Length: 128
Image (cartoon, rainbow, N blue to C red; front, side, top):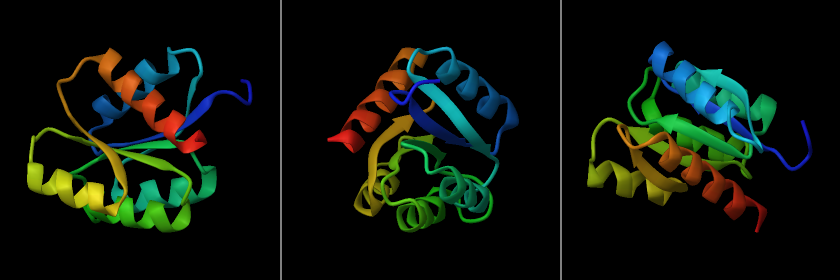
């Protein structure tokens, strides 16, 4: 692992999706998944512990959902760039999360390449 790798946290309550996202990201040069979380509180705790460059956060998960995770990560790991990930294309939720600091709102079903590109954009934004 080099210093140039983007460190990523993946948070989703679906274990299969969490594993799939982690595998997709780990397969990419320059990306490293430092932790995975099954709920919002675990996401915040792991973000504080690992200080990832980017966190990919499920909007609807136990213990507060994406809103709670976003607020906590923003406080506990302020340099982490946040991406929201949802099965629902809900503009109200997307707007709320963007106001809280989420860079992009991704809808589940997009291609792996689009997910990777969003993670790289968020990581690049955090550097600049």
